[in-house]
Amino acid sequence: MDKALLAQTAAAMVAPGKGLLAADESAGTCAKRFAAANIPDSEEMRRTYREMLFTTPAMKSTISGVILHDETIRQKTSNGVPFADYLNSIGVIPGIKVDAGTRNLPAAPGELISDGLDNLQARMKEYFALGARFAKWRAVITIGENIPTSRCIWANAHALARYAAICQEAGIVPVVEPEVLLDGDHSIDTSFDVTEAVLRTLMSQMADNKVSIEHTILKASMVISGKDAKNRASQAEVGARTVACLKRTVPGAMPGIVFLSGGQSDIDSAAHLNEMNLGKNNPWPLTFSYSRALHFTALKVWKGKQENYKAAQAAFAHRCKMNSLASKGKWTLAAESA
Ligand code: 13P
Image (cartoon, rainbow, N blue to C red; front, top):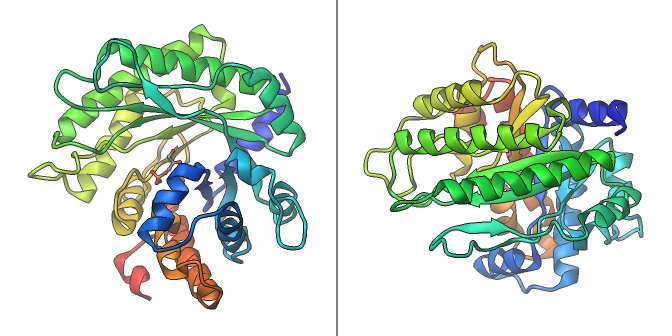
């Protein structure tokens, strides 16, 4: 295990004022997002969209790394430069999503397990050669009647830990992402309890599987009321309870924690991250690793049309800057409209 390389990558991923851009949507997810914005879907459209994001000038100062999809890491800019090489040239670390998506967990109605451990060692070697220096594996935990079960939490934590061990052996920093879904009408208390159970199990599985905490980044979901909850917790409460839950469960040795946006609005995702960073002495840097909250607005502005390219880049740059401010506790609603 190349500890020096892993430590250098992990530190750069959570450098002050920067966060990760999640641009690793599968072709299927892109098709849905494109359809919602009336954009015809094709491999070339997906390439053009990613190029539009990656060549936005604000990337350099606000984005430390980009999570790519298998298709994207093999694509090139319109000048023929592989995306991974282009990102390296602007000081942005290429990363790769390696889970193969979810399927039903057997005999567990409503619960999911992520696939992708088969051949992962061989795939990691190839991704390293293609330039990836960090990876992502997303596990999905659903809150509902009598779920999540401890079996589902254990199975997903075990897979995350095995993936993380394989990454580290290959010189790739694992981003471990156990996403507790926002869907449902549950309270913030339920979100707290489930997130705590998930993170405790994940940390225990990582220890059992000899994963080095010092060379791992956690991608967490926030502790937050369900999307359809009647009395939704305030932004301040989401910030405070998320940090409290993380302090209980995540060793201070971890180099950093990044968050997914999970379907929160652009403003909520920035405000919640900002709350966590408001003059507080947290044990780890807390920053963003958003997909929708960084570039869904840009996609809607772009509409797949060349004439909207610059306006879409401006919309994306704005979200990058707002979330960069939030990672420093310097975001304000006034900055949003400035
Ligand atoms: P969202 O920010 O849209 O939740 O996506 C982040 C991500 O990478 C989920 O795996």
